[in-house]
Length: 218
Image (spheres, rainbow, N blue to C red):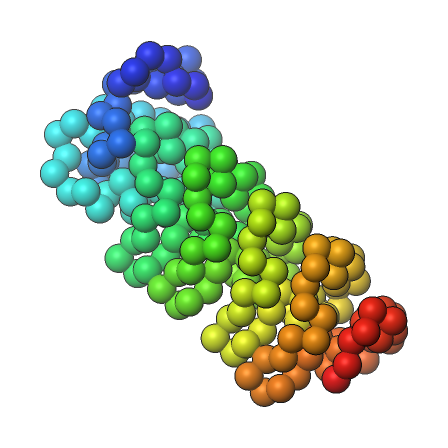
């Protein structure tokens, strides 16, 4: 998929007209082809959506399509929607954001595509969670590492006060602990119960020793 000239984009070799940054999609696309499975089927559905964009009067449909594609890791489809100019920071009716959906499922390529198109890496969804916290709390530390590299807030917290470093320690993921520390995570931050990453490391003596050597306290 690539942009051609203004007002058009090319998807799988076919030239399709889009209506620009306010493009929306017709709801019927969701019920047609994406259930065939695979990103190729989704791209066909996006072509239907692109062709219907000029006749749709529902501005929420583009957001729904974007969130759906992000949440399922359909990167080709996501790229086609982003090329239409859809807002990567728009939340759906549930307060979900494309980037927090993708990060929470561990879809690294989808996260990259969203960030490249301007997604705010520190935006929080309707539950108050950033993309980094979504990734870390579900042990998607490859995604977390990518988000570090694009300046996500290392000390963002979930509603319980847990940081990414605490989650890495809790999951006993040594590389993730190293990465968080090397990017400058606050080693002695405390959650709402007063616990630090060292406390969360618990029985993992390797991580416990690492944190103590770096100045960690309980």
